[in-house]
Length: 98
Image (cartoon, rainbow, N blue to C red; front, side, top):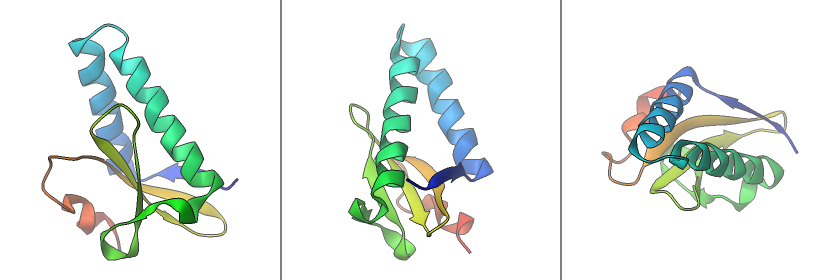
């Protein structure tokens, strides 16, 4: 398994959603955090098993929530570019990728 690293913008949106779900329903923030962590861990274990996304990136669904983890994998790390809601503007995160 390779090490995962979040871009600062991806980490900020992840923490924002944890806060949102925590306030929306008791325990939902913890479940969201666990589901994102599971998606990231699966991507780090088998990076190529993600679905193709824009700009040559991959994505993996967050189980139980309308989100995807968008990432780029190398031999050394899994770079999380976004924790993207399914209803947000498509590829809004593209400016994060160079």
